[in-house]
Amino acid sequence: MSGSLKGKAAIIATGSVKPERKMPGRSGLGVAAEAAINAMKDAALSQNDIDGLITQVTGETPTALAEYLGMRPTWSSGVAMEGASGAASVTMAAMAINAGLAQTVLCVIGGLAPGGDMATDSSPLHRPQFDNPFGPASGATGYYALIANRYKHEYGVTDAQRAQVAVQQRFNAQANPNAIFYGASISVDDVVNSRMISNPLRLLECVMPTGGAEAVIVTSADRAKDANNKPVYLLGAGMAVDRSTLVNATSLTTSPVAISAAKAFDMAELKPTDISMVSLYDCYTITVLISLEDAGFVPKGEAGAFVESTDITYKGSLPINTHGGQLSYGQPQVGGGMSHVTESVRQMQGLAGDRQVENLDYCFVNG
Amino acid sequence: MTDEYNLPIPTITTEAKPFWDGLANNELLIPKCNDCGHMFMYPKAYCPNNGCFSSNLDWEKVSGVGKLFSYTIVHRAADVHFQEIASQGPYIFALVELKEGPKLITNLINADVNNVEVGMSVGIIFEKINEDITLPKFQPL
Ligand SMILES: [Zn+2]
Image 1 (cartoon, each protein chain N blue to C red):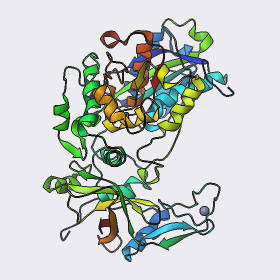
Image 2 (image 1 turned 90 degrees about the horizontal axis):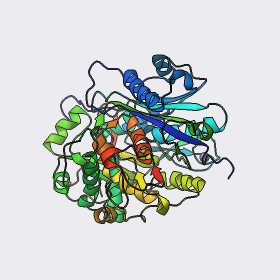
Image 3 (image 1 turned 90 degrees about the vertical axis):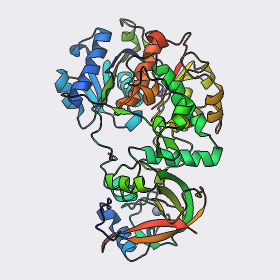
Image 4 (image 1 turned 30 degrees about the horizontal axis):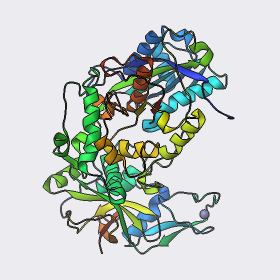
C-alpha cells in the first residue's frame, strides 16, 4: 500500500507520572519532563540519542520542553488533537521516521490539572460566545450529555448499561497502583446513584481531571531491533477530524472513529476480530460505547447490551481500558489520551503487572 | 432577571456581530451564501460548503422554529452563577436544529423537565438581557 506506515516504526519505551489532583510546587513542564525522563530511562537512552520531539504540554511550546529537558532535537512538532493527541503523536513520529526526518522521536503529553471548573476553550468564536451564555455543565459534561441523550433516543441504552463501563474499568484500576481510584471499587448501584451532573451523566460516569504526563519513544523498525525492551510495532494508523463543536457534528452518535479506525485497520490489513485488547478514549462512559461500535467491535446500537453481557476487564474476553481508563486512572490533561498508548505498549511488552492480559497478538488504541 | 444580570454574556466577535444585532431586534439571522444558498453556523467570513469559497454572504431572517436535536438537564454548571440557578432547580441546555438546517446551542425554557423529548418541536423566545444582548432561547411549541 502506498503511504503505508505498516511496520515502519516501533514504540520502544514508556514513561508515566502518577496522576494526582494537586501537584503543589510543580510546573507543567516539570511534570512532562518527569514522564520524558522515565521513558528515556526505560529505553536506556539519553537526550543526545533522541533527534525528534513531539509534545503537547498545556500552555507550553515544544521548544520550551526541549530546553527544559536539555534536548536539541533536529525535528520537532506540537500536536493539538485534544484527546487524540497521544495516538496522533505516535502516528506523527512514525511519519517523521518513515520520511527520514528523524530516527528516534520522544512523544510527551500532559500538564497540571485545570484550575477551575469553567470550560477551558478560549476561542471567543465558540464557547464564550455561543455556549457559555446558556450555562453548559462543568468540563465537557454538557456536550457529552447531549451526545448521550441523542444516543439514547436513536438506539436506546440504559443507565445501568453505561454504568458497566465505569464499573468494569474501575475493577481494572484495582490492579493498577498508579490509578487515582486504586483501592476504591464501585458497583453499578454506586454509579446509577451517584450525583447527577448533567442528565443522563452522573458523577461516576465522568472523567477525573488530574495533573500528570505520559510519554513514549518511537524509533525506526531497524533501530528497534537493538532496543532493550520488546518493541511494539505500529501496524496501522488513521486520523479523522469532524468538528470542534457539536453544532457542526456530522452525527452525535457516530464519531470520527468510524473513519479513523477503518483507515487504521486497512493499513494494518487486520480486522476487529484479530484484536486481543482495546484501549478506547473514555472521557465519559458514553464515549466508550460509541467508539466500540464505530471501531467495528460491536454493531451500531448494541454496545450497551454488549458491555452488560461481556467481561471487558483485563480478565475478560475483550479487555477494554486495562489501566482503568481515564475514568479510573485519571485524566492528566490531554495526556489522558496518551495513557491509552502507554498502557497498551506495556501490555504488549508483558510489563502490565497484576493486570497483564495473556496471549496478546494485536492491540487497538484510539484517542 | 430584575436584578443585575450576572450570568455569562456572549463575547461578541466581529464576524458574528450582525447575528447579535439581529437578536437585539427580535430577529434570528443566519448566515447564508448568496452564491450556493448554503446556510450555516457559526458566522464566518467564507462559505464552508465544499468548493464554494464564496465571501458573498448575507444574513437570512429565519423562522425560529425547529426541533430539539438533543438536550441535557444541568445539575452541575461550569459557571458559578448558573450553579446558583441549578441548585434551585435544574435547567435545560439544548441543541436545536432549525427548520432551515443549522443548529444552535441554547436553553429550552418554559418546559417541564420531566416531559422533554428529543425531536419535539420548539420555537424561539427572544430573551433581552440589555440594549446590546438578546439571547435566543427556545420553548416547546
Ligand atoms: Zn456557498
